[in-house]
Amino acid sequence: MVFSIQSDLGKGGRFAVRSLDGFGLKAGGLNVTGEMGGGEHARGERAGQVSAGGARAETYHVSVLADESLQVLAVNEGDVIFDGTLGGGGHSERLLQAGARVIACDRDPAALVYARERLAAYGDQFRAYHGNYDQMDRLLDEAGETNGVDGIILDLGISSKHVDDGARGFSFAKQGPLDMRMDTTADLTAEQMVNEEDEAELRRIFWEYGEERSARAVVRAIVKAREETRIETTGQLAALVESVIPRRGKRHPATKVFQALRIAVNDELGHLQRALEKTIVCLKPGGRLAIISFHSLEDRMVKRFLRQHSLAMLDRPEWPEPKVNPQCFFSLPMKKPYVPGAYELECNARSRSAKLRAAVRLGSEGVTKQNKNRYAK
Image (cartoon, rainbow, N blue to C red; front, side):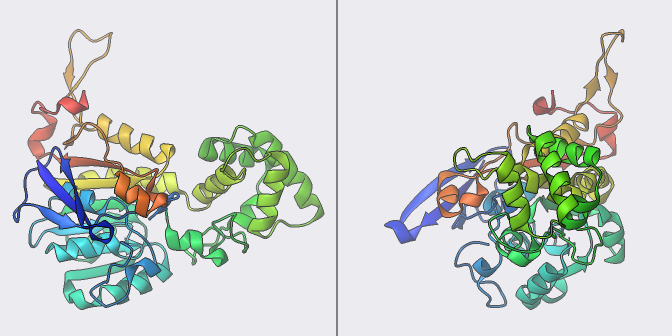
């Protein structure tokens, strides 16, 4: 059991102590930090944290479940960790401070510029590439890590920077072009999708990716409106959705529609599925996987994948007896995901929907030997 002690010295000097089950006590004993996080389906750097390069991290993004991620990855000096969602570099900096070598990527060129400057003081200990995390095998080969890595962290979703920058077109609360591309070098934008996709496909996108019950009505309104004028801004689309779905409570009626468009434009679930499969070949035996998700579609996909690949035995009613699962590649060190605590939620409301799931890569015997993981059953 590891205890993570979060200090709140700005509020009377009190300390909060939390146990992190499922992981061995690391060298150095207690991990003393100030816990912060991020999200609004935005991956949320610690407010006021100063990076190695001297830049104040809160100017870009707040890293969610940072302490828990570090403990899940159980970093030792010299470990090689792949950070597939570099963003502002918050998780990577924590890993570098723990003595790891970090190979990172991000599909957003602007994030790469920021993080490379922020982490420049770490020299060759840190390398960052432009690309998506489902290209991890190619990126690791390019970095010379052909034998796998000791850990992989994926912090899914968009960053706070994306949400707060109206010019990126992610937020209905910010007036801007209807863009939503995480990779600004990509071709497809939300504007193109809204104005050029056929009615049936838009309904599918809003229903499957946004779980929007009023998908049909919203799409009818979009089709009618785009016949008269092109829908080009976040404000236009938000107002159009609100004309169909009245406001109820605090959530804006366009929340699910914007989420669905963003997922579709960036093929987020497709990239996630391909990346999950590649973790099997990119992790060394004993290597650890940490994945932070922010909505149910992502979390269900991660949960299903880990369960499928951590069951030691398979059984079906028509079989005379259970069979060894040849796809058993992981053990699961904890039964339930970690979620932000009260202090993190207080400091960063955007972290509220975050869930951290973890897995440990089994050795070659994992496919033939009984997996003693009771959480996989």
